[in-house]
Length: 69
Image (cartoon, rainbow, N blue to C red; front, side):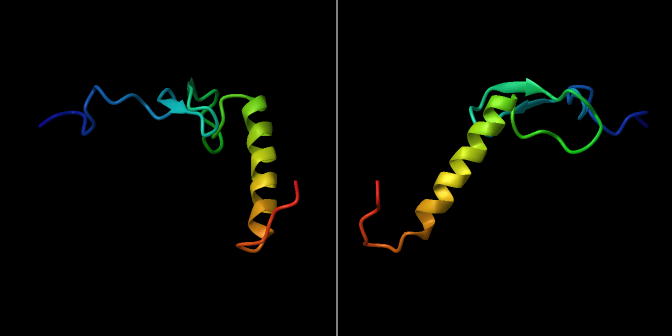
């Protein structure tokens, strides 16, 4: 019987490379505590907050009506 159920080629969760939800760049999780981060930097986190705010305003406009610019 093998001593490990996991293959040696799969890296541990704490060192697994993640990909930023904003720019797609790979990054390494800085800490094993708490949930895994979604973004590689504070700039990406801020950019996604701005995008979410803008997209939520767009969704409020009824279909077929011109948007205010």
